[in-house]
Image (cartoon, rainbow over all chains, first blue to last red):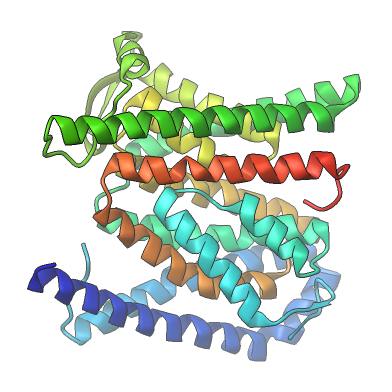
Length: 81
Length: 301
């Protein structure tokens, strides 16, 4: 493995750690702030619940990835592309 | 940790581990991984109806992460993905109609189960045979290529169909192929998915490679792009029926999002035939799980 490859893999691992921390923080935030509301939404309004559920998953996937990319750029690390 | 919607208490680390494992497989092979995550979730005590919907929800997030990573690596053919979606959606509907027809005739579970096992075994055997031949070809001819197909007869025949309109897919290195061929392959994967009641990732990936001639890495990425839409749609329909526990899905996705990134990036270090050879084990595992279910009389998933 050349120096560039190991550098890129190291950067990828840093990116994973940042992303992992954000994903866990996001889940805890959702659980703490929306937990009760989501449960009552499930019991009383399934159409809204279904949309909110999809949005929460999409946000976890898309938004956190964007935030990670932004942070990685700010740290001056090269992304694996 | 208590999950009030599903009414179960599960260690979140177990869910994260399941998500991580399925995420790696999904990112590497371009599959949703429902055939593995489903039984695992059921094993943790989640009710059957919530297993399917929740699995689809976490699959949506995981596929977004993995397909986005594949896109940055140049492994997603967006044009091909969009056209395939049109064929797949129609196919899923036809497959569902086929199921209804068999339901009227009776014994639908047995017919679907046996069809499922046969299709999975054929895919597994063919992919293993072809990829081993391709690996030997690369070795014996010292080819300096990332991907090669050892069996191109079907692909050549498909490309020989000159039915207007012809389309090109520069992202997949395909200069000209009939639009109807692409729609047809999408339709076929959709019919099989709808008939067998699965997401269809492990059907679509080999079909893209062997029928349309898409390079393996691009087939993986494009397949994941399609799964985003199919599982997203499935999430909504299941959530409307109360079959999605968003808390379980979010915990699973915590592991899956990391696993999917690792799986997607790992494809960079494997040549196409090696990915296909490893992939050939997946349908085999799926077939074994269905055989166990058929023998046990349909208990579990």
